[in-house]
Each structure stands twice: as structure tokens, then as C-alpha cells.
Image (tube, rainbow over all chains, first blue to last red; front, side):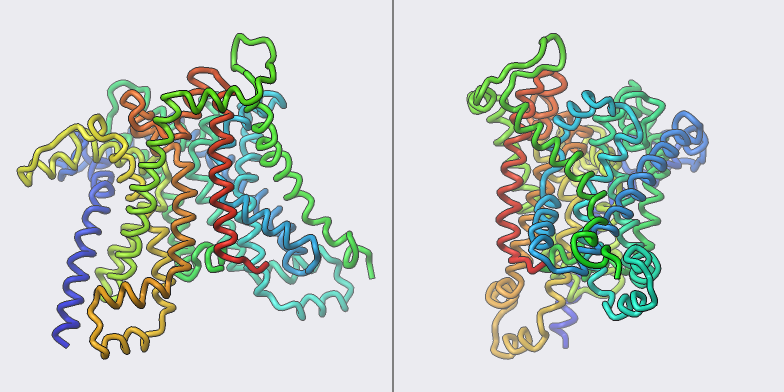
Length: 274
Length: 288
């Protein structure tokens, strides 16, 4: 019994040390955002202030980039989820010579370093006049997330029993009706996970909009925050921290909403379970 | 019975996704293969000529490219294979004996670092490693020598940043894997008098070896494509001392306007990625 207690104390100690190391940058973010004279080290502000938040809550700094992010990532998420649901349905329901190679290709694509295709994508976008457009960037973002979403969606769909669809077919429902009225509602939680996960991934994506969107008024928050601390000469760290918190808040909240389902067992949608 | 439920019609819903993938992913990859064999430039050049393997020959003779390959290896080895993988496994293991509040606290912090947008993480760690930053403040407090980390050891600074950001993934995978090991096996070994380290080496590790393989593969692949984190922290510098392959590719293609050469580098990166993907698929022996 004593040995178990000792082991637990040792484990607690080691974990607390790691937790402290992981916490430091986050604590700095939280404290700096309410510190009028924030610099680069962690310290308790001599006086707490909301000035940093006040200063960044303007159209130019916060609202426009956040709205751009919402349009870009919201649109791309919608497109990804609709296409993934449509594609996953036949893949989940019909076995044929075609579905296995298709799924293997999808899984293979999931693993490719998408960063590497950004140079040719830029070239392609210049040629087909999609450069510096929100919808063009959205289309590419949606595609980049599509393989994983199809894979995830298919795994969730496999969990819906086939008998229920057969009942709907007997009642004369069409193929598409069966998908939208029977299968998708039954996999509601799975659908939520795919949607939120896709949105979180896209919201944080920096490289794609950094390459494909050029005009400042179209930039999403992931890129505007970068110009914020890249170009403005003397950076006001308190404001940058405040903006970082505002920009990160949506994904943190959304993650909490799906955290239970993602949990350990999620292991990225069985893509990893093997 | 409508024809959409049988025959080819039922594959129609797959079309939108397939078209997107063909146009926006397969297309650029194909284009990549073509451009990599030309001397395309962003400005000035009128058209582009086929130059065969010149870009690749040039890459292997280019000290900048070799530097990028070396730094990518260091970055991947330190941050993915050693850092994220080992720390993730250690955290998952320790959490099995730790008390509940500590487990929850650590888990939450590690996962928060993972969920934060890439560029915010980069900004936080930039502040942490700067000369005036928290790390040096901490070292001063401990009476240890401080230094300008982003200048003296930029590749290690970005590697640690990647560990901070990416360890949660390994932790989640290993937590799931460890939870599946039946208790009685470890208990039996304990009764037989096997010590802690021996139990880990002879029982735990062999039982989760598939998860280890999977995790190593996925960590490596995601680390190979890290761009924003490094770009925001150091821009590949000072000089080119943290210029991994994605940063080198960007630099050649856009700062130096050598699209053909930059694309050749991208193609090499894709090839390495594909190789890992194929090994990964074989390792998993997926049943689909």
C-alpha cells in the first residue's frame, strides 16, 4: 500500500513539473493581455486593465479579420462536410472493387504533407484567376481537409445499422432522402465531431491563406495576427496577447464541446486504430 | 426500384468530393511534377523551358538545400521522434498512477497547447525563448547562464516549440493504447517480481508496439510539413540556421522567385511524405 502511495506521489510530482512547463507560455498570454505594460516575461501586472482588449476591439484589428475567418472557414467547413457525407455514404454502404482502392487513396492522401503542394497551388491559382479570392482559398482549404473528413465520416457511418435504411427504402424513400433523413440524423454526434474538428483545423490554418490571400481587407485572423507582430515595428505585446486570446477563443470553446467524444478512444477516427 | 440504388448510379454522390480532390489536390501534385522539371520563374522570364533533372541536380549540389535537409532531420528527430513521442508516452504512463486532479490539470494544459491556432502557439513560444523572455527570467532566477536562444540555438528552440505544441497527440494515442492492456498481465508480472523498468520494457512496450509505430509515423509526417511555427518564430534564421525544407522551399520559390527550383524541393518533400504514408498503410494493414 505504501509503495502505491509513493508511486502516486512520484507520478504526481513529475506530471506537475511538466504541467508547469506547458503552463508558462499560457500564463504569460493570460497575464499580458490584462497588463498595461506587458513585456516578454511572465509577471503579475502591477495593475490590471482591460485597455488592451479595448484597443484591439476595432473593425480593422479584430472584427474584419474574424469575420473573414468565419466566412472562409465556415464556408469551407460546410463544403467539406457536405461533400464528405455524400462521398462516405456509398463507400460505407457498398462493397465493390472500387471502394477499397478509393479508401486507401484517401487514407494515403490524409498523410501527405500538404505544405509541399502550396507552391504549385499558388501557380495554379494565378493561372486560373483564383488568387486573392476568398472562395478560391475556401475551395482549397475544403479540399485539404476532405480526405480526413471522408475517412472520419465513413467510420461514423459504418456504425449506423443498415436495417433502418431498408425500412425507409420499402417506404419508397430515394437514395438521397435515406441519407439525409435517416442516416445523417442517426449519426448526429459523429456529424458534429466531423464538423467541429474540420472547423478547428481550418480556423488555425496559417500557410494556405498566407499564400493565397494577398489583400489586407480579405485576410483571416490567422494571417492578420502575423502581420500584427511581424511588421508593426514596436509591438505592443499586451494588445497582441489580447488579440491572440480573442482569436483562439472560438476553437477552444468548440474543442471543449467535442472533447468528450474525441477523448483517448477517438485516436483520430480509427484512422489510427488500424 | 430506381437505378440510383443499384448499379453505377449509387456512386454519383462521390462525384463532388472526387472532383474537388482531383482539381485542387491531384492537379497541383501533377503540376508540381511538371514544373519541377522546368526553369519557371515568378518574374522576368518569358515562359519556361524543360530542363530535365537540372533542378534536382542543382538541389543536391546546393549547400543551402543540404543544410535544409540536415535541419529537417534534426527538427524531426528532436521534436517528433524523441520529444513528442517519448514525452507523450511518459505522460500517458504517469497518468495511470497519478491522482485524478493532477491528471486532469496536466491533460488540460497539454491539450490546450495543441488546440491553440498554430500562429498563436508560435507567438507564445517566440516570447518564451526571446532574450527578454520567460525562459531566461527563469534561468536567471536559478542562477544559471541565460542566452539568446533564438539566435544561438534556433533549431532547438523551434524543436521545443513543436514539442510543446504537438505532444498532446501522442499522449492521446498512448493513453488509449495503455488503457487496452489487461490489468492482470501487469499484475502477474508484478507478482513474479519484475521491477518497474523491466515490466515496461518486456511487457508494456511490446504490447503497444503497433501504437508506437503508428504514432511515430504520424508525428514524423506532421512535423515534416511544419511551416507556420518556424516561419513566425525565426523566419528560418538567423541566416539559414532554422531553415527546414518547407521554409527553404518557400524561400526559393517566393523570396528568390525560383518557382521551378522551389517546386523541385516540394516534390522531394512529397516523395518523402509518400514513402512514409505507404509504410504507414502497410504497418496498419488497413481493412477497409
